Image 1 (cartoon, rainbow, N blue to C red):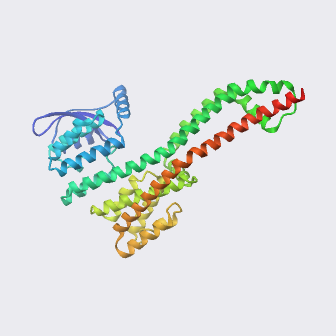
Image 2: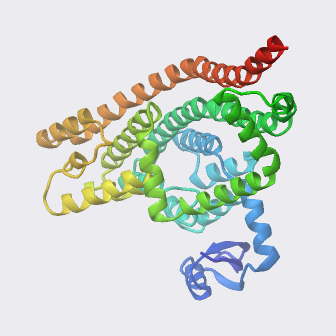
Image 3: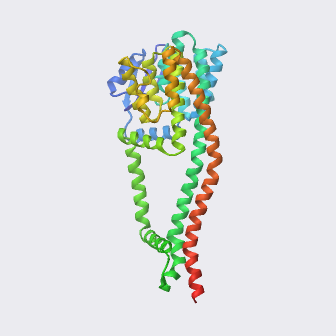
Length: 403
């Protein structure tokens, strides 16, 4: 969506500048007029200016840790009866992220101009999720904004801890595998050809493993540039492919089928779904609305499609778990528990309990995975190195014995 740079005069006469996203310039102007602004200048970001803005926002991306800290500080200050405008502005002053500082300052200005917090947050859909905005709106409607902020702060801290542990468990093997791949590539291109030159010149029968090693090494040494270009082209093509709707669905489905990791991801998505639904329904959001919001925050195309099918089933008068029963990626126990909760009219409580159960399960699986990964990688590394060394050293030993 295009971005438009504006300069306006607010109702109290102050001059303000900022960025607004809208499909057209007219739509951007209407959005500003709805806030009782007098438009002084409005133009689209173009060329180098737009690229510079995108680069700046990328470098100053708002992290989950910053968001968790901001929500926690906001909940504490609102609980202490600090005016909402002052609370948001204080957090803006304390933020070290220039992008986040500007966003929070603009939100404070919007609230000061008479907008509700949820309305101000809606201006930044890439920063604040629909789940977050709807929970704030429910707190404003019921007069329990302080309680909702406390709940969101606790929930976001739990999500942050879970995702940090998951990333820690998966990033370690990824780094090791990448390092092994680079080291193996260098060995095959520069080291192995020199070691196997003697065996090739001796013109003696070689084991199959040695012939495969020599052939692979020769190809990589001669066409290393083609391998690098092909790898980069594949990575770029894959990146754009998973950005498509079909590509994202296939890739997310594949991740759920990976041994061990797939089970961890399946339980993580169950946790995210149950916690989101429980929180939204506790805030007074209807089941269909809660499902629509949950679909947007799942982060997995397979789950998103299943939730959309669930919405259709619920609208048709069927059970919440009708679509889930057709999906193999949802644990059977979770389906049975949700069905019981729906039948007994205690769905909100059951959602909370199922979310807590699988949250603990994910934490335990992540801890066990981090413990098991290191010895598994060492075994794989040892087998790879041993195979390569044996393919070179055994023929050399046989050659020296024959001489």
